[in-house]
Image (tube, rainbow, N blue to C red; front, side, top):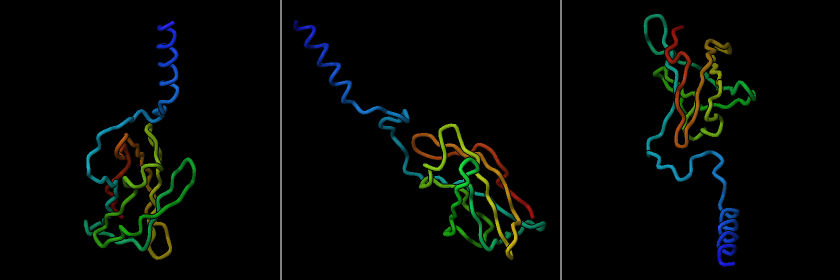
Length: 130
C-alpha cells in the first residue's frame, strides 16, 4: 500500500509540472542584445541612405519595420532579439526591402533562426552594393 501511495504521489507531481515546449527550461542567457543587419553601399563604397525600409516574414507575409535604426551609415536592422518571436528554432525566411524616392532599391532574403536566448544569422547577403 505504501508503494502505491508513493507511485500516485509521483504521478500527481508530474501532472502538475509545466511542460517545457521550447526545450529551453531555465536557460542561462547572456545580457547581449543581438541585431541582424544589412549594410548598403554605392559603387564608391559609400553608405547608401534609404528613405525607408521594412522586413517581411515570407511564410506569413507579416510586415514590420525597425525605423528607429534608420541611419546615415548605410546599416539597417532586419531583426533583433526583441523580435525573437517572429522566427523559429528551425529558422524563417525574412525579406528585407529598402526604398529610395518611392521605389524599392533593395530586396534581399535572409534566413534567421533563434535559440533559447537570441536570434542568429543563417544566410543572406549582409553587404549589398547599389
